[in-house]
Length: 88
Image (cartoon, rainbow, N blue to C red; front, side, top):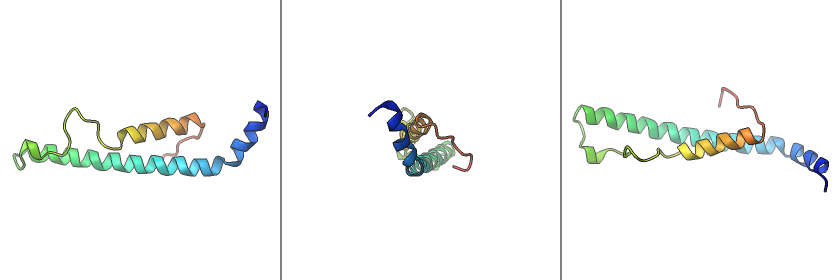
């Protein structure tokens, strides 16, 4: 196969690929947003002494769940040249 013959194959699967990448990104974004909300809530409760420090869900040095997945999904979307929509 030459380089010119590979391109149509990619174009045929573009819509399925776009859907898959979009779904992966949305799932990772939602997981990250939920983890961020929980972290902020825990910090607020900790500041008001409503919970003990050992009860907080995220440690300060730990990357929130979903952040790495979200970043890799964003990169995959950029690599395939799919323009992100603001509604994602």
